[in-house]
Image (cartoon, rainbow, N blue to C red):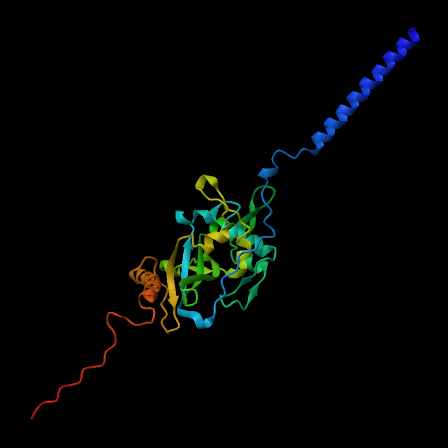
Length: 300
């Protein structure tokens, strides 16, 4: 009797232990397979994203062509979106130049390429550093290059094509090139339009591959799913016009920002689209061409 009771108790003990082990194993399995709580909060992988291509155009359909140069001033609050720390326009440019994903050029004809080191040296400035002995006496000094600070670049120049596409029936503006501007330090007092010069030029269609990977979304500012490429492609920035060239042979000198000449040129560009729809055949209907009146002959 006692032996049977002992065996029964021992069996029950083994069954309880096995049940707890199974529950523990099941609980561990469930815990290990649960997703991390912040999975949906992780940043999306934008490494494979590509910019959408421009609509194709034919040279035969281009009308009213002009090339203009503008300046983007980052000190203007309207361009604050291009100055976000860690995702600023200048940081994006230099990060991609250093890794070889973006090519910088000497001029906007895109013929002479610059290395990453040459590009960075365009911004290098030096400081005189004194050297002391162990007693604290200055022995000599040497020039040392300061580390590049992207926040020092406050202006960019963009080169644009403005034209009327007859096939699509609309005015189009396309950015060709972009250049960070260096401040010129001279003894002479230079006008505002001559106080800076391009450090190097970037081919904008190539730059777009870097810009589209910079997510600028900010719910607090009602910005959702916005990239830096969107800012430029939708012209969500402020820039002032400084120069224009047209195939008709007219070319302006560099204009002062906000000058009467610059404002007049802005009005001219803005009116191109209106005029082409008002007179689609290039003829002013209000004043059609007329044959000159014949002079009346004097009667004898």
